[in-house]
Image 1 (cartoon, rainbow, N blue to C red):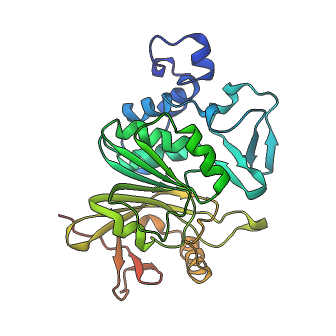
Image 2: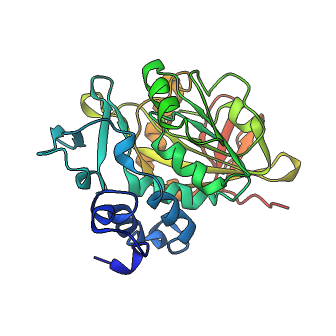
Image 3: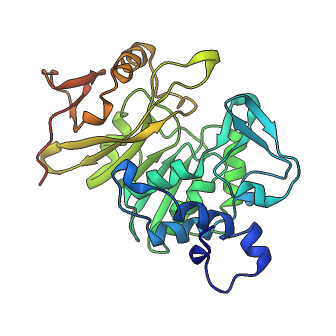
Length: 303
C-alpha cells in the first residue's frame, strides 16, 4: 500500500474506516495515463478523502454488485466500502453507488475548479455530489438532480450540512438548468441532451455516459463517458474518456439511437471521436448520428 498518500495526523481508526484511509490509497494508485489524463490530482484525492462513503450507502452489511449479481458483504465493517466496489442503493431497481475509480477518472477529466457552478444529474444519495462540492469549494455551487424521490430525500438529508449544495427531486434532462461550468451525468443517455448543451457556459464541460442498447440479461450496455467542451462560435470538442455502463437516464434515451450506438461501439473506433456537431448534416467524418446531433472524427479548432 502507498502509505504516503494518507493525510497526516489521522488516527488508526480514521485510516481504516473513514475519511481518507482506503480512498486515498486507491486513488493515488489510479493509472490516469491510460485514459489520456495527467497523473493523480492532489485536490481530487483530497476531495475523496474528505467524504465518508458510509454516510451515503446506508447501514451494512451492504450488497456489492459483481458480474455474477449482487453479493452481500460478510460484515458491516466500513473498511469494506473503501475498495473499488459498486454498492447497491436500490438493488430492486439496479441503482447503485458507482465504481469510485471510474468517477475519479471522470472528475479528473472534467478538471473541476474552485468557485465553479456544477450540475450533477443522477445524484443518487449524494456521495459523488459531496465530492464535487469539495472540488468547487465554498465559493462554488452544486445543484444535484435526482428523479427517484426516495433517493432524492436521502441525498437532501446526507448533503444538508453543505451550504454550497442544493438537491432538486426532479429530472435534470428536459427542464431548464442553470448556467453551468460543469455538468456531470451519472446515468446512461443516448444523446447529449439539448438542456445540457444549452446550459453550458463558454469553456463549460459536459461529461455523460453515452450508452447503447441493453446488454445480456437486461444489464446496461457498455458505452463510453463522452466529454464535451463548448468553445466559442458554437463549436464543441468531444472525446471519450473511458468505457462505462450505467443504469438508464430517465427521459434521455430512445431505442433508435441506442441501436445505432450499439453498432458504432462494436466497430471499436470510439477513441477516434473528436467533435460534436449540432443541427447540421453528417459528413464522411461521422462516427454516429442522432436526432439533431452527430459525432465527428474531425478535430474541432477551438478558440
